[in-house]
Length: 258
DNA sequence: AGCATTGTTTCACA
DNA sequence: TTGTGAAACAATGC
Image (tube, protein in one colour):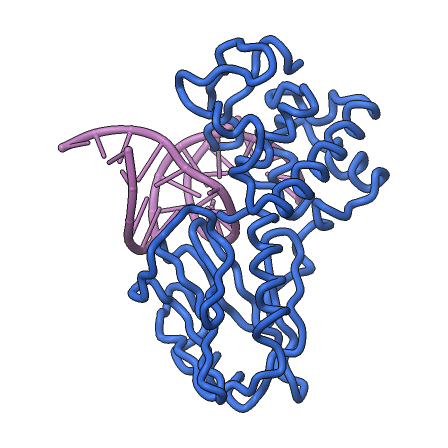
């Protein structure tokens, strides 16, 4: 997906353009994207109301709604974008307008429209999303909480930081980028990292997020272009190592990451 | 044709 | 009971 930086840009787009506009109609007929709701259920809850806020924790977004309405949760999944009128944000890959990928739509009384445009349909829209099941946001977690939560397992450190219950917002690309910046081997057991290494890891995640939000997405990371079979480390030129960690394809520099 | 994919959830198994 | 890994999910792109 879209990882934390792309979701933050999508959230900001909604906050900037979609709040306080009266909802006239909702298309929630994609039963996979809107599961477990029955068709019409989300529409019934939203029509006549407005979105009051646009919030985010990790890769999950939600909007509070007017008149004590239910919160509207939106997750971009693996390839989702948010489109509001003529603006869009989310999945960074360039893509021409493809309205057939519109999986969920809100029409406003003023004639404008908010859409979840998602080629793969792994995005999700639901009422009252379980935000509390997520760990602290990766961009805001304190040093103390990061140390405690991440080091509480023997899982490979990469798998641990990608566990959304531990820490919300780190996806596959951001994990590779941050581990490379912090020079830590992604296979290391999380509970084998010392405090200095945990702090380095946290700083790298926060810096990678900040940079990616400013530049437009995780794909702007330094090591991302080297994530390919013939890629070499951007710092030392050593061929990148490739493997599967936590079920995801992982690249790291065998010379620098320990 | 076959394989890989920036995410999440479920299920089998240790 | 807890933790871990693979598979499923849906669709597209190389």
